[in-house]
Image 1 (cartoon, rainbow, N blue to C red):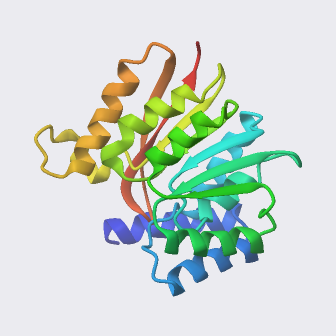
Image 2 (image 1 turned 180 degrees about the vertical axis):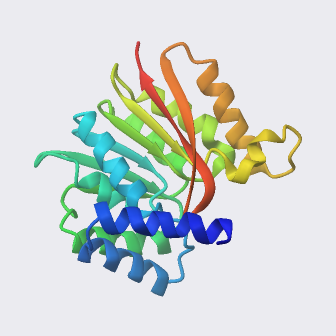
Length: 223
């Protein structure tokens, strides 16, 4: 069996065993595909992992940088208590419109605040509004800005906040210090950020599956 086919088959096996069919999530993926959004949402088993991490963190407030069609947003929102809040930032108005409909159809419209526009502008606006700390920050947006997003994540953190950054392996390209792709350089800069940040205890895990060879970093704010 070819490598990618094997990885996908294993992900399918995991999902069949541990991630039951879900109308809201399936509809979100279908609506995103119908609207022409890129097929880059997290896999179902990865989405459930995000939900579990948010529950382990006791998250009442979640910040997501990069909404796309709202698939990961729905997973994260499912970890929230009844009075919880999730702020998600999306650059593209068309993507945000699809996400808004998907999130509302899943029953979380009242819990999710979608901010549209460049994420760095939205983050500055949150600062100006005096936003309270977040319990979990999920970063899955334009990779060249990862270090800036991490700076903001820490600004909005408290002791115990989890920071999760997706796509930090890039099919192994992260090993290439001179790689021309700014996304790879942004990811490499993310490792430098985590390594140099004394307030955060971090690691990263490479993954293979339906989404190919990639990985995620996770940091716990300790001070």
